[in-house]
Image (tube, rainbow, N blue to C red; front, side, top):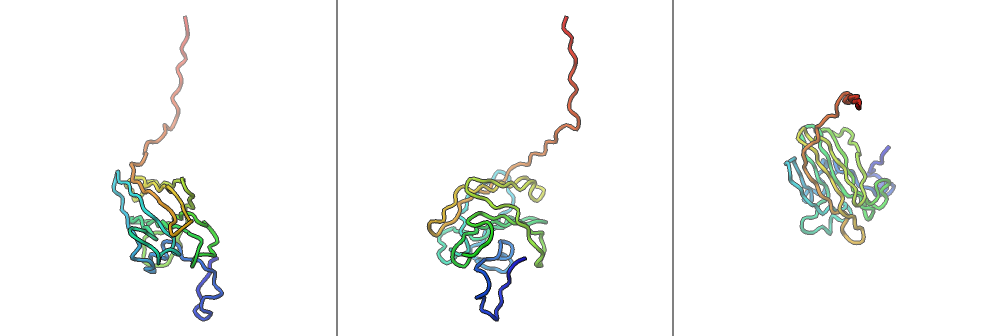
Length: 175
């Protein structure tokens, strides 16, 4: 069960939590700090990901929401920094969050698939039928205006299937 903003109360009774990546993207929040990536084999990109609470202090190439654009299921990456407008977040505190949502133009539910700490990795297998996408959290630093440095790598899927039956060992007799 989630919370809703009530304009009649000025939002005072609502917890200070931000929408997840798909909702923030859909609403156009922080749109000047969005980044879209499509699968491109062998490409690796490092991104400075900041929390929504640090949006106003963003500089350079800081990003609030990353969308991994696909034909069926899009993935969104955010940093769930617990501060400011997001100071009462309930889950994934100061972690990198990965959610996915089927491609459509409505408000169907999105699904949280990963909550990552520093030095953790999440692999999206066979992304858009093209290959794997590996998201690595290189560092999380909540001491200032930053949040996380992540690397997104596009790789070839390991489509090797194990044998259906193991080979039968041959019985060799010694003389």
